[in-house]
Image (cartoon, rainbow, N blue to C red; front, top):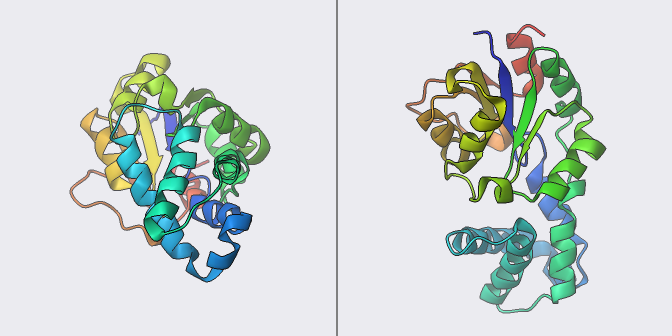
Length: 222
């Protein structure tokens, strides 16, 4: 397929959000007694985030901070607001997967690249500038989409901005429910990247599946 554009989930597919989250949380003084139970904190925060996102729309910085506060309360202790905000502000500096920058530069020779992310505009662009180090033609953050994935807003905005039919756009993600299913619902081409042991979604017509972005770039011949 001659793809006219390639869009990506950012945090989780290009950026190692699990390592970034754990590193940022481990640096908070309030969590120093919980270092051996960080997995519980991470799981509680993620549950709180999903609940918050089902309510009225909030900027993702607020979602991150509030979800940490709520997750910790559910475990029986408190995190100061300043530390919750420090965690939220760390997002732009979370580490990318090692293969990401070089593979993105290769893929950019094939077609314009876009980032579709649940985060806010500023950290998304900061991450691209500091860590991705590849030309990005399109940024769709949650505020621009007016919703959080897996709602269709990100992909609808992308199609309007790109002025392309969905079958000419390849969407790349490690996640079926949050990315590949809604992209498929609008007719995008699909590429699955097997990050962190994620399994390829069943029942979707994957144009590509790869262990990492380098392998995807090889498959696409760039």
